Picture 1 (spheres, one colour):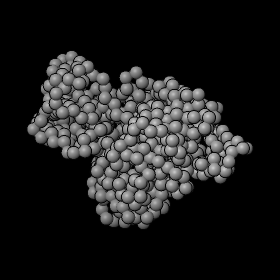
Picture 2 (cartoon, one colour):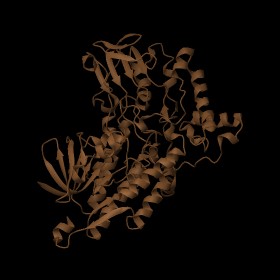
Picture 3 (cartoon, one colour):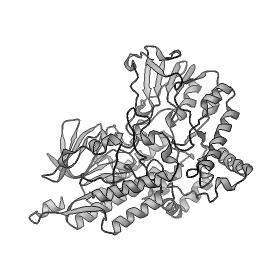
Picture 4 (cartoon, one colour):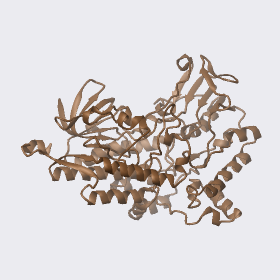
Length: 542
């Protein structure tokens, strides 16, 4: 059996940087990646219109000043091809591919208490032994397809936004059905509508979405950003969201109705998140209602058919589902070749050979697109079949996601030397993930260096520490509106799944300070186990 120092799963933003840092520490490291190249979620999500909702110049690595200077983003929001091109550039620049095993799925990762090592099995039947096991699978790598009756009977083309073909898909002249109006659906629907003969959009829950305001960067902005990135990075590290945007200081309720509307209109016209307009939109229900009403009014102004506008108008609390950015989404429903179907009032009965049947009728199409999202946060981890001490499965410890307990979103008790990059109860999913990933990778690297320097065999979070952290996470989220809705954050999009709100909502800067304090206090809240007195030098260094 091959023995190495560390195994990392996933070759996206997390896995690539983790590999780079572990190499710098002199650790033998292997990355296992299911795809046949780097990119992670941006390798798989090639659907029409796929974009990131963090601005390009902030959605990149910041660890290398040289990398920052040599790479130039073209547009305000990066699309999937641009992000994938960037990650390929990073892999080439740091020669990362030689330690990545592509086209390989990790089928299990079990902790062996006798050897104090992780035994990781892959779908080629091989097992590799590692001292450290690190998940870089992220939160959005486990796509979800609802178990519709007759799913296999459809005779046309079938796609999922989370695993889109690498070759171009041409919908010209075709009737297309899209199921789902979350972020991926809202991005794909306007693009598909321009190609398709006719597009049927099957919507369960209408969404709040505002224009992204995507546009090319001008050269002066790029020059200024590169020249001042040191200061910009410090702002990002101390911010709530991991971007340098200054937080609003004013309450929505302290503004007049005209002042509020002007503030919301300014964001709407410029593009970006409406939550940036006032400081209390996610802590005060009355303040939040003003933002929600502004978007509802916009829908009524944009969509010409009153019945369609009504069907597209959300009623839930704004921000309790992921706020979405779009390019012409509501305008798409003014097209003659687009039909909106409300499947909450008329649920899907079954998929048929030629289309789809609801309780109110049949719809025929040539191609079917599932924009049904992901089994977020826990789904990617549970697919790995991670088992710790006494063979306890992570899925069982967390009761299939209903009772998640981590320490800092990085570790969990009973699983020594197991690290999660942007795991549950970290700021991931509500932050600039590129910044959150970097912080986790650097924290984990520093931790492993500390273990090796102090001749410690393992690190494991204490039960008391993770219970306290989980309680703190809940208290913080309960003080906001984030946890008051049903969303993919809480598993509402997965049949039978329910999670307490799994994101640390106090922000990137606050979280970073807590993690730094834990580290400065000798990994407070963790149990550190030294090597046995009779361990040989080779074992201690391995």
